[in-house]
Length: 316
Image (cartoon, rainbow, N blue to C red; front, side):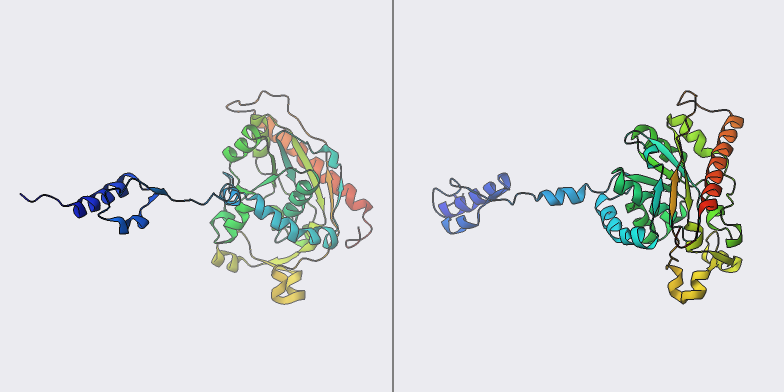
C-alpha cells in the first residue's frame, strides 16, 4: 500500500478548496504546494459592483416593448418637425386627463400618416404621460420597422391589449377607427371621415370603464396627399395600398418620407362617458354603433368648423 506524501496531500487540498470555494482566488497558493498551511488562508476575489446604469438598460423595455430611452431619442428628433415644420397648435388640451385611463380617438390621414406621432409627441411633451398607439399588426411583422414601432409605444390593435392598457394599467391609448380606409383616401376625399369600423373602440371603452376623448386633426391630409394608388404594387408588396403621392412627383425618391409643411391644428373635444357598468360580457350592439357614429360626427363637425376658419393650408 502506497501512502500519499505531503506534496500529494497539498495538491488534493487545493482541489477540494477550489471545488468548495468557487468565489475564492487560489492562484497565489500554487507555489505553496507542500506547505502544511495550504488552504488555510484563502483570499476572496474582489468582484466589481454592478453598474446601476446596466440595471436601467435591462429594465427599460416594458411588457409592451416600449422603451422610454428610445422614446426620448425619437422626441428629440421629432421636436423640430413638430415645432417648425408642422407648427402644431392645440385646442382643448385641458380635456386630456392627468391620471387614469382614457381612449383617444382621432381621424387618420396621409400616405404615411404624421398625425399619430404628432398627437403622441404633444401629449408626452406637455402632459408628461406616455401614450400607447394601437395599430394594425402589419407593422409588427415588418423587419426593423416592427421593432422601432414597438419601442416607440406601438401596440397591436387587439381588444385584450387595449383592455389591459386602459383598465389594468390606466394608460392613455390612441386609436384611429378609420384604419387604412382613412390613410388610403385620395386627396379629393380629404377631411371626409370614413366609417369608424364596427364600433369596437366603444365596446372596449365600456368594458374598461374609461371615457373616449375625440380628437380632430387638421393638416395631416396635405402633408402627403395621395394622387392615385397602384393595386399591382400593393399586391406584390402585400400591403393594403401602394400610394403615389404629390411628394414623390415633386421630390422623387425623397418624397417617400419627406412631408409637405402643412400647418397642423389639433382640437381635443370633451370626453364622452358611457353610463353602463364595466366588465360586462357584451353590450348592446345598437348602442355601441350609435355611440360610435355620434363620436364620428363630433370629429367630423369639428373638422368642418376648423376648415371654415383656416386661412391657408401652409399658414393656418
